[in-house]
Amino acid sequence: MNCGLLGEKLGHSYSPFIHKYLGDYTYSLFEISSDNLGDFLKNGDFHAVNVTIPYKQAVIPYCASLSPIAFKLGAVNILVRQDDGTLIGHNSDYFGFETLLLRSGLQVNGKKALVLGTGGAAKTAIASLQSKGANVVVISRSGENHYGNLQLHSDAAVIVNATPVGMYPHTGVSPLSLDLFPQLEGVLDAIYNPARTQLLLDAEERGLVAMNGLWMLVAQAKEASEWFTDNKIPDEQIDALYRILQKQMQNIVLIGMPGCGKTTVGKLIAEKTSKKFVDADKVILEKTGCTAGQIIKDQGEEAFRKLESQVLSELGKQSSLVIATGGGCVTREENFQYLHQNGQIFCLHRALERLSTEGRPLSQRNSLAELYRVRQPLYERFADEHIDNNGDVSQAVSKILEIWEG
Ligand code: NAP
Image (cartoon, rainbow, N blue to C red; front, side, top):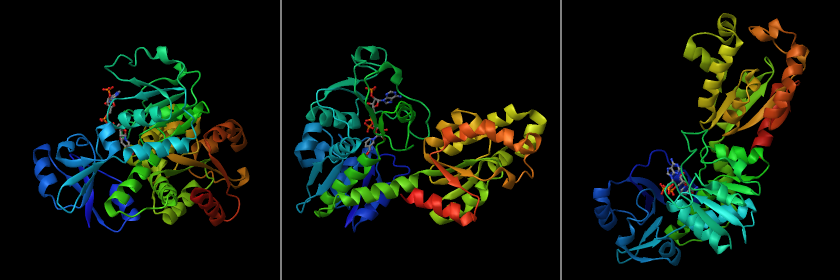
C-alpha cells in the first residue's frame, strides 16, 4: 500500500520513521509544487497521504467528502483514496492536540487560554480548547489581540504556542514574556524540535506545566495510520512511540569537574545509544586551531568562555548527540539553556584526588578543592541527574543508560 506525506518543501521529516513503526505500508515523501497539486491528487499513485504546509486547505476542493472535524476546522491533514478513486479528507491534528492537552493534565474549563498564531495548528488548538470550556483569546500579529496589548490578558491560565517562533534552527527566542501572566498554570508548544523552546524553558523555570508538541505529532500519526489501514492501533503504542522518538531526538549531555571521565563515558554512551559523540573542547580546537589551554593562556579565561558558549549554543540545539562539555561550562548561566533545550544533563562525580589534571590549565593553576567549592552549586544547578564515577567506568555508563531508558 502506497502512503506518504504531501507538502511543498519537506526537508527532514520524522513521519517516515513514525509510520514505519505504526503500520505495514510504504511511506514516501511527496514534494509537489502548487502547479502540480491538482494532477497529483487526481492521478498520483497513492492510497492515502498526510498533508502538510501549505496544502491543508488547498486540498479541500479535491475531496469528495470531509470528516466532520475536517469540515469544522476547514483543514485536512489526511487524504484517503476510495475504491471509486475519489478522496475523503480528515483531520487528525485535532486528536493530536487533544492528546497533548490530556497528557499535560491542564484543566481549562472556565479559564482563559491564549492561543498564539492563526494558522492550522492554532485553529486546531482553538477548537479543542473551546470544546473543553476554555475562554480562548487568539493572539495574532495583526489581530485585535496582539503582542502589544498582552496586558489585557494577564489573567490567562494557559498559553498555547502555535507559531513557529523558537523552532529549530532559530532557537532561543520566545514569542512573549511570561512575566505578564501571574495566574499562568501551563504552556503548551506545538513545536517539538527543540524539546524545550525558550518559551517552555521559561515556563519550566517558573515551575509551570511545560509540554512540547511531540504528543501531538505522535497521536496525529497514530490516527492517520488508522485511517490509512482501517486498523485500530492501541493507545499504548502512542506511549511507546513517544518514548522512542523522545530518546532518539534528544541529546545526552555530560558535565562535571575537569578529568572526571566525561570523554570516556561519553564515547561509550554514544556507542550504546547509536548517537554521535562530540567533545565541546575538540570542536573549539577544530574551529580555532588552539586547545582550551592555549586559548586560556594566550587570551584569558573570559575569551575562552565566550567561544565555548558559541560552540554550546550550536551543539545544544542539535539532535541525537552525546555532548561532553568542558568542566567550566557551568560558569555561564546561558549555557544551561543551550544544553537543556534539547538534552538531559548528567553530572559525573569523581573524588578530587582521582581527577586527572594533565593538560588542564585551570585545574593546575587553582587548587582542585577551591575549584570544586566554587563550581559545586553550579553543577547542582545544571544537572538533571548525578552519577558517581569512582568505580569502574562501565558502572557509570550503565547507570546513565538505566536513567536514560527510563
Ligand atoms: P502556519 O499555518 O504557518 O501558522 C503559523 C502562525 O504563526 C501564522 O498564522 C502567524 O499568525 C504566526 N506566525 C508566523 N510567523 C510568526 C512570527 N515570526 N512571529 C509571531 N507569529 C508568527 O503554521 P502551522 O501549521 O499552524 O504550525 C505552527 C507551528 O505548529 C509550527 O511550528 C509547526 O511546526 C507546529 N505544528 C506542530 C504539529 C505537531 O504535530 N506537533 C502539528 C502542526 C503544526 P499571525 O500572522 O496571525 O500572527
